[in-house]
Structure formats: C-alpha cells, structure tokens
Amino acid sequence: MPVATDRPRRRTTLRAREPGTPPRPLVVLASIALAAGTGTAIWLLPSGATGEWAPRGDRPGGVATPPGTRSPAVPGRSPAPGGEPAVSRPSGFVTFVDTARDPRFDLSRAVRRDHLRWFTLGHLVAGRKSCVPAWGGFREPDDDPVADRLGRLRAAGGHAGLAFGGPTGRELASACTDPDRLTAAYRRAITAFGAAYVDFEIHGRASSPEPETVRRRARAIAVLQREAAREGRPLMVSFTLPVTGAGLTRRDQEMLRATRAEGAEIATVNLLAPVGAPATGARLRPVASAVRAAHPQVARSLGRGTAWNRIALTPVLSGPGHLTRLDARRLAAFSGRNRLAWLSTRGAALTPEVTRLLSAAMR
Image 1 (tube, rainbow, N blue to C red):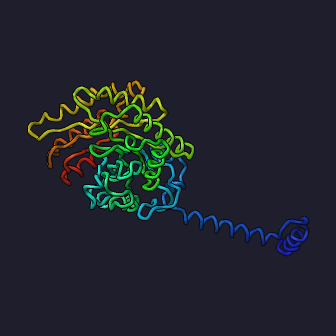
Image 2: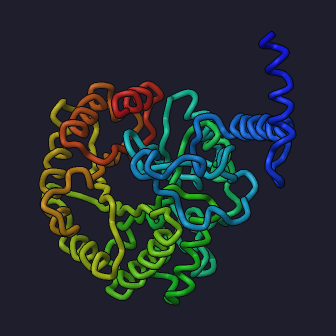
C-alpha cells in the first residue's frame, strides 16, 4: 500500500542527511524556541512603542529631547516608564508655573483636571553663588517641590521646560562671567530636570544686557545645542521678550541677531504683552497690534522671510479674573488664525474655567 511504501522512504531520507546538518527535530524545536522568545520580547516592550523604542521620525515634531537625559536619574525626575520621554517643542496652551511663589502647584493633577500638557517652570536666576542657578534667586535647584513632581508629570503625559531669567533677580549669564562655568550651570539644570526645552526671559533687571553678557549666553547655548545635536536630540530654545505697540525694542532685536551670530538657534520668540482690566471688549486689540508690529522684526532678527510660527504670545494679566471666557476665545482664535507657536499667560492666575477653555481651544 502507498502508506507502507512512504514510511521507509522518509526514514531513508532522514538517515541520508549530509554530515554536519542537525537532525530535523532539533531544527523544529529551535525554531519554536526562537519564535517564543521573540514574542515574549515584543510583549515586554512598552505599549505604543514610544520614546527610545520608536524611530525618531515617528516622534511628533521631530522630538526635541534635551542633552544629558541618559545620566543617572534624579529622584522624582526620572523619565516616564518605557525609556526617555518622547517630546516636541511646546504647542497649544503652555502653563507658566512660578515654582518659588507657588511651591504647592501639582503638575500631574493639572494634566488630569484641566487637560494641560505643557508647562514652563521658572524663574531660574543666579543664587547666592553667581554661577549656581536658584528658583527665584533663593531656593536651591534640588529643593523645589514643584520640580520634584516632574516624574509624575511625565507619567501623566505632560512635559516641562525651564525658564532662565525673569523680572527679578540676577540673570545667570550676567552674574556668571566664566563662560565654562555658565555653560556647565545650564547643562546641569537641563540634565537634572530632563527639560524638554529652555526659555530665556529677558526683561526687568536683565532688559539691557551688556554685549559681553549676550555673547556669553549665546555661546553657551550654541555649545549645548551642538552637544544635543551630536546625541541626536536637538535642544529647543526660546526667548521671552516684552512687546509694545511698536513691537520689540531695538536692543532686543539686536540681542536676537547677536545670539544667532554666535551659532545659537532660536526656535521661538515669546512676546509678553500687558493686558489691562476688563473695562471694554476692545482691550485685546492693542495685544494683537503689538504682535503684528513685532512680526517683521522677529522675522528679520531670525533671518526669515516670515515668522508667524516662530512667535508665541503671552498676555500679562494685571489682576485675577482679568481674562474672561470671551477674551480666552478671542486669544485662541487670534493664535490659530496666525498659526502662532503657542499661547501662555503671566501675572494673575486664570480661573479654572478659563484654563480649561484655553486648553481645549488650543489643542
């Protein structure tokens, strides 16, 4: 019968395998083991294949993660589970947190409650030692309850950047005159907090920096950006500057050009625009006019033909509740119509209702 004929033929084939070839049962068992091991490895990968597991081209906005985040983690500031957090430049509505004045601000709770995603933590200025930054000039970098919650923020899906400078205190580049120590101070802060981006807020006492200060800060930024580029994780840098009906001051425009001349790349110019009390519905018109006046100045300073997507807007509120729901809708519409980089606020706190409205409108 055919069955009886086939069996001897198969046994003959097995006996006739070439020398050095493993027995077929062993090959089958090895294949099964390899498939099982591969399936287990894939199962153990983080869900969504984000962070370092994903190709860089798959990360939104090119993903700019700071240099040095591979160094040992700081307690409470470790990257989100599954590797380093995949982040991009700020977008939508960015919440500024004055960590020295509001040390109880809960970042992860704000993500869950108000659906916020981006935060800027400030202000880092020179502390008791001229080359050591401190929150508000008096709180040590590793002694800040808000910054200590960054691990929980990232686990909740949020991102945070650092703001150097501000309206008070000594700007770090002005106080720290040693270029190497200044660069090291910036690097330590960026690394320790795993900052997604860095902002330099130049106004108040730092509004008229000397040319040496501008060059020193610019060269430090350029060094850090080159280091980040070599690691494949560009460092996004923005400058926050006051704006009036005439736009930026000539000095600020020169500062931006001088910064670029030293090799630093400026991704965004964030405009601080004062807003008065809600007396009339037309009070936001001066803000819009100031942004329009600043646009060609920013474009020229950054060496671009147009710069709307390089401009962010930050209204400065003079009192609590001074940004109404109608104001928030108008600001969001203006930002979207002109394709601004992001929208934020300074000064008086927003009401929870307006915060949630801006968060939803700016997505």
